[in-house]
Amino acid sequence: MANLKIQSSRVGIIGVGNMGEAVLAGLIKAGVPQELICFSVRSTERKIEVEKKYQVKSASNIALAKESDILLLAVKPQGLDELLTEIAPSVNPSAVVVSFLAGKRTVLLEAALNPKQSVIRVMPNTPMMFGEGMSIISAGKSVKESDLEYLREILLGCGKVIEVSEDLQDATAATSGSGPAYFFAFVEAIVNGAVKMGISEKVATELVTQTIVGAAKMLAESGKSASTLRENVTSPKGMTAEALAVFNEGKLQDLVARAMKAAADRSHELA
Image (cartoon, rainbow, N blue to C red; front, side):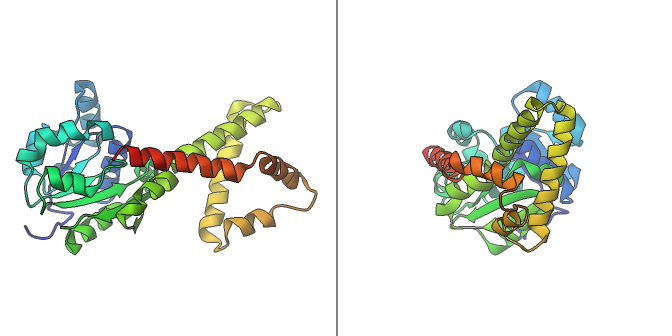
């Protein structure tokens, strides 16, 4: 087929849960015409919700497999085998198949679909719904550069993109794919700490949210490392130093490293 173009290529999305919805919102934000986007979900209630919210049409898995120029798979990893059994005979052999499933290698999809099928693996994260996502892409053996260019153009419309070898996907999934959840958990902990000191949850949430937004902007735009920025705000024997000392006593860095390894190991187990 001709090279994929945002204004003319038909996009099918199978699965519109949290991640699938982030991908769908990202497609629209990136400029893909809504009339070219079609999706499938199991729940009738969810189908109606997505159609109304995003003004896109729904279809069956088989119809999407046959008609899409680029087919995006965003089901849960545990459901991939069943989905591939259903759609494999119908997938357009010239389509680009993009998997957003943690742990599922491109060779698995190539074996189930077509050894020459263009298959790309992506680990996105949910901030792409707001144009601030981080997507990690790895290409299968039959992917053309033009396929990657199209996908990059879409994903850049909703955040940043890097390409890595597929053997690093588990590690990057544990870093940026699961990363927003780590961030939210830390925010929860700070808010709870503030509430225990007498601040209302509403005020604490506003304080923490703006503090984190500002800190992230400093990290992104100052050109300084996180270590340098931390040192700049930490006066010797000051209040921040006291807080960080408690983190160090609790071995925060070791705890985070163990959590990330657990996530990466689970991603590998899903293969």
